[in-house]
Length: 234
Image 1 (tube, rainbow, N blue to C red):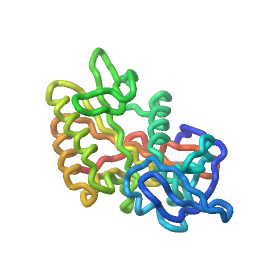
Image 2: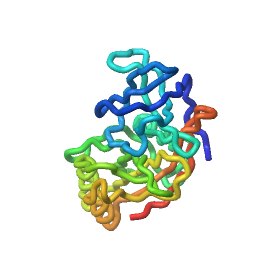
Image 3: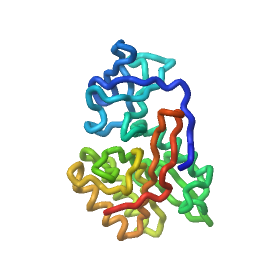
Image 4: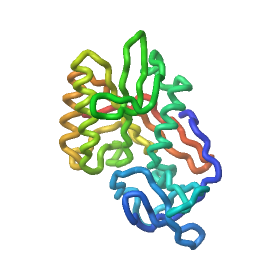
């Protein structure tokens, strides 16, 4: 395991309930507050009443006072903040901790591909690699899974990458298993059965399907890379 990011001024809180897509009601020192979240998954397994969460105070407070970035899970923290997941992924890449990406050079974030914006664009020997990351924070035993609800956007991304590879390009999907102590990633068929079928088809047509494992450690307030090449089960 390698530390990737240190997070300052972490506040512990108690989850009360999810108010809407982006706001969770929390309790800090017996005071009820609102916290922003940027993960649009249902997160029903994590956002349960009474569960411990980890927040950051927002300086530019409007409708919320805090940002909820992780939830207590297996003695550590499941990272639900997708921006933090991506920052940790980028840090691992810069530190050369992802061996299967060591030949690639970072070009840009948010690259246009057909009708989609793909998270990353990399280059190697004049070849371009479009790479999309997805957040996998649903647990089933030792598996991290995605998605926990139907994702039309996720389906479109897979199809666009599959078409790009079929035309001679390079494409990859990386599932960030932001849960401590998982052994593998697999698609959650009950969340979206189309995603699983598309991933199998994409793999068979040459899209690289990978997963990395990471978690938040509340004892030292750091994000750790737990597995740079987590097993993918399709």
